[in-house]
Length: 351
Image (cartoon, rainbow, N blue to C red):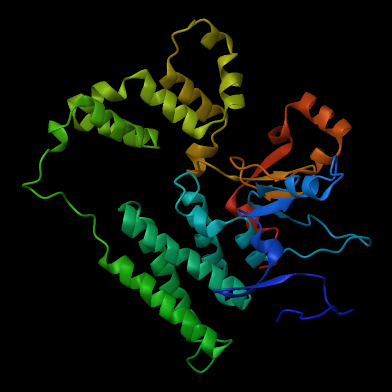
């Protein structure tokens, strides 16, 4: 419950009432706007008003790597999921597989052993996955796997204590209603085939439209299968633009420039074989090919902060010009960040 007045027992947090209950404002600030004040040059009341600007706070979460005698910290899974904006990230095609892999790992460890708020958050994420799969007509196998895992968890919990799950009865009634909705969507979802009388057919589309469809494919194996299915697709898949866009989708500019600096690629000149470059990047880094994650959470070694690389995070180096200069010489902010796969992410919490 929120503290109405100042109290010496209060942790000093500001609480806001939301649709899901009371939540701390520092958890809700990620992904939202907040005012930043500039005290320099504000000699009058009007100047102070004009010195305020709204900035977007990217999703991030500061973690405690290890506890010492001076620093004792605790990493909460529920707070981390909220601050990293996992629920809305389900609809990001770069982060979808990462979120689903995280949900499968948590399900294997047992959702029932988590706090009630974390249970509610995870089930809401699975429900968001069901809604996204139903809307996009993609990845139905992932949703069915999560639905089967939830069914297995419910059957296990019903065998623990006189045929009823341990914990709050009201909370489990809410969980069961959510699980039933997820299973209903998973059982009813079907990939809708086009109407036989609908026009135009795929083979009747111009090459420009087929090319845009191929550009949405994020797996090189799907591209190779599409090339074997139709002669027109085979010709389009062989274009350099397709493999260039696939390379830029999976790898950042630093990785691409590192490969392009190799002697065998320098000899190509201005005309690059992007298919060969993509496979060289895949063999060198291997993250996207091994784990099928187009984007992975990163851990900043400077401030122990988890964040999405595409969004960045408010780093401590911004407050130290000297340290920032040394960091730029070392290669920038991401040079001091390490990728965090789902299994490593769960190790930061006591599950």
